[in-house]
Image 1 (tube, chains in turn red, purple, yellow, blue):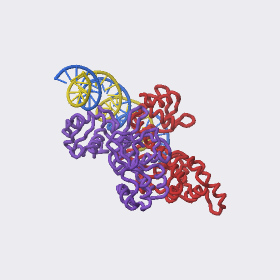
Image 2 (cartoon, protein in one colour; image 1 turned 30 degrees about the vertical axis):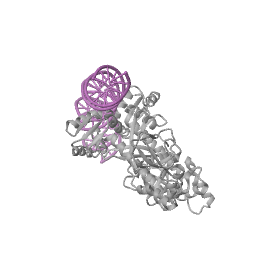
Image 3 (cartoon, each protein chain N blue to C red; image 1 turned 60 degrees about the horizontal axis):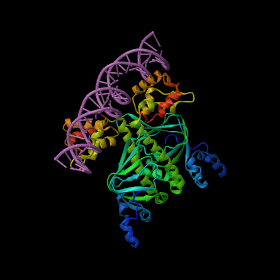
Image 4 (cartoon, rainbow over the protein chains, first blue to last red; image 1 turned 135 degrees about the horizontal axis):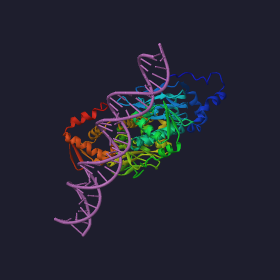
Length: 244
Length: 244
DNA sequence: GGCCCTCGGTGACATGGTCACCAAAGCCGG
DNA sequence: CCGGCTTTGGTGACCATGTCACCGAGGGCC
């Protein structure tokens, strides 16, 4: 992957105990890996690297065989697919504490990944190379469970994404997305175009819908940002999934 | 799973060589398993069962933790998801020679599968129970590769499904589906309602679109079936993906 | 100030989804 | 065979969404 480099946090020369305590710390941040036996934890830490990626970097892309599994420590990665038609479909977002696990399919299958991932913020992540991944997968049932659990969650997400695309009204989906994207001061920093891309719709639709929200006094708008005023009303709409 | 029973084809009392030759035969039908070493093939065969399922059976369903991986020998299984809204989304179809691999995520993750599978025809399949699956996954890198390759293909399919739903015109999608479903005499046996469900749209839309196809002389219709007359025109439309 | 690019607004139109309702074709019991 | 029921498909009205063309405001930059 881009920007891989020797991890700063694992200099040579430290004694074994120290190293384990120091570098194993990130393992504790992944629920499914905590319970690994000590020797496997050390194998995992020794066989992987911590990488830093600046915002905007293409973390992986189609046509490039994935060669490492990323576990995100900080930041977010947006995963989308370039359509045959040139347009882009937003698929999901990987947050800190999660893994770009769908790449593993391609990693072990030696097949190309058909989606691409972009660092939305500066990202710190653990990169587990193919060899280490395969080694751990062979040695530990717990590790396999960790991987498959991550898969399971992603696939379930994809299913509900499809469900929403097919059956959910745009205003409901937009309301939900606004709530997800709002910062602690209830402001969403995104252009109508960006919101449209995330929801797989056109900018005009976002504009119209937001105008309607504004008319109802739910939001206020400024160039490049949306301020949620009537948050409870928006939540009510977002929760009204399936009532049509 | 429903209908699991002792495989008829593996009676006790045969000598080892005979048994291996006899029962290992199905393994050869799965490209990725052919190259397994002999001992693992035998472990796989010994640890799994051949099951038969009549058409219409619900093979797996949400709320039921999957406990076996199915490799299809004959027949097809339709995988769909019950929407929150009660409606159903067709996700994909598993054919002979493929696996219901997405259930494995839930099998190893001990999580519920959110989609359900229905046997469209009578189905014969190999059921690999969780224990055998985990054993093989731990012992063989090749087996893991087989699993992840299957994953990779399914996930890629899901991605293109999303892509089509979002960006593809209904008439193009319908044309493509008709070609997929047509038998050797160019007849599709399906009601408008069934076609609508597969494509995630309403019966009325299918009716209108087929009426238009008929007006152009591309198809003829009878109750419950569509006969493709101008196959080449339909193919041209189906291939026109992305030209809008 | 003048240029240019991004962001957003708007009207007209095409496509697709929903609803209500109808008619024709098979099915089945009597 | 009749009559009623169910399944299948047809249709018009209407709403939601996507597309296209075009415009104007804001803001950066020379």
